[in-house]
Image (tube, rainbow, N blue to C red; front, side, top):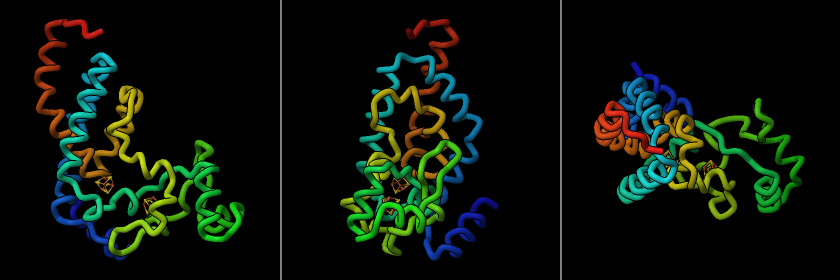
Amino acid sequence: MYCIIFVLFSRRHKFTLSLEHTAILIQAIAQKKQNKKLVQRLSRLPEKKIDTLFHDLHQEVFEEMDCLTCANCCKTTSPIFRNIDIERLSKRLKTSPSQFIASNLKMDHEGDYVLQHSPCLFLGEDNKCSVYEDRPLACREYPHTNRKKMHQILNLTRKNTEICPAVSQIFQKLQQVNFVVSLFCWLGFDFG
Ligand code: SF4
Ligand code: SF4
């Protein structure tokens, strides 16, 4: 069923997601419960240990991942546009920030500017970003799996397993170390 949803979505927007990436995302949806439990266990680890786990796996997964074969983040979600992002993009597009906002953005429930529609208006059918050098900071940092203080965004990152095949793969690899973490928790080992 999920496969059909993904295919319909892709056709509607004239963008496609490869079968390989679709399969990875379906696996993440199927593992939702396990990933929730994994986040609970990870949150008991020292902050630096959590960072090390994610940063190592980020490097490993992105060595193999070619984002130009995916672009699912640009197809299905919106980055946050900070004022400085809006100013930079308006300048590039030779328009005013207020006109750029009126034409393309809306405010979300947290008071941040986000796209009115997905896929992103700057995404080409070749999966390339037409404003790559001037893209928002949020695009540069997505999927945030190599940032510091990962413990602050564990749940957000878990939700990204259903959007980003790379994050899904990172969680699949984390599940492999989950057994060791579980064992230590069961033995009452104090990670703090
Ligand atoms: S960051 Fe994730 S969702 Fe975005 S293009 Fe790369 S693999 Fe795909
Ligand atoms: S600005 Fe570029 S990188 Fe950011 S969502 Fe749009 S197409 Fe993707």
